[in-house]
Image (cartoon, rainbow, N blue to C red; front, side):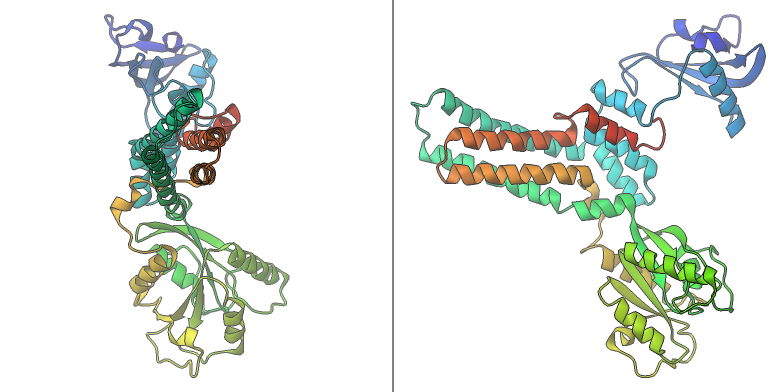
Length: 426
């Protein structure tokens, strides 16, 4: 395909099909007798490529149009567009990556903070896979021991040997529980946390969004009811991707457009994992504020006292308001403390770079949860003196579930689901 549309520069230059592996060639792409672009073409032959297949990569000039025209020329000469995640799927099928590493490629592409990127790179490097393989090999060792006794039933299992097998299964269960505890943080890094900014009109919700983002994203006006729709933007808050949702002011509205905005606000609150309830500290505490405070009482919430650069006129307020975080969206006062509070609220414990080495995703969590249940069943059966056939059955189920994480146990439907979530062909 490359031969048909790539014309190498110079009389002694090689065409792609005859070029040696891992060489770079200057030339031009032509289509229908016309010059499309001057490019660099790299030839890489299997198995030393991303997919372990023969690969040609073309580097054209930046910009959408040159890339589009080069792609058109290639498609006209027999190429086709890649399916989502197809290159990484080929890398998995050809044994260059396991399934957990393949998923890390998508996480790298989608990462929105340095910490999320670090977690994805650790998974791509195989940190999670190494631990999963070690666990699976240990469980296979226990299974081999049990099956040996099934084949030779006349040989009794010595008490010390039985105790050793129980200890190994308990160690496996403990390890699974350790991995499962990383799931909430892992999912936070991958998809972020939704935080709805709510409150009465004109308390400074849009100004707070702008301060948290570090730029003017929302229109700010002294006129109440400026925000009629929800505005979503993602910010890096102490390494955590937080999707802030600026909402319409909570009040009874006569205007149908504003009514729709209030309805969307309530939807945003239901979908949020964190609510930033903004109050105007320069005005007396209103009955509406108290009503909204009660409505949001069952939500994970931070009360934000905006306009705290002015004299405080809130008066007597509930404890939730008295302990609120004072900020000034005009001067930026208190914004860093608010970011610290957001991080502490959504992330349990200290946030360290070394925590990202092993953080499982939702698919891993589901597979490892099944593995833990099967392993617990095997442990219960072994400790209660059940037949080894029952113990071995549960242990095989646990081994199969563990193998799903790295792809040692998989199906076409599972691969279609995983790689179908990639946003691009890569």
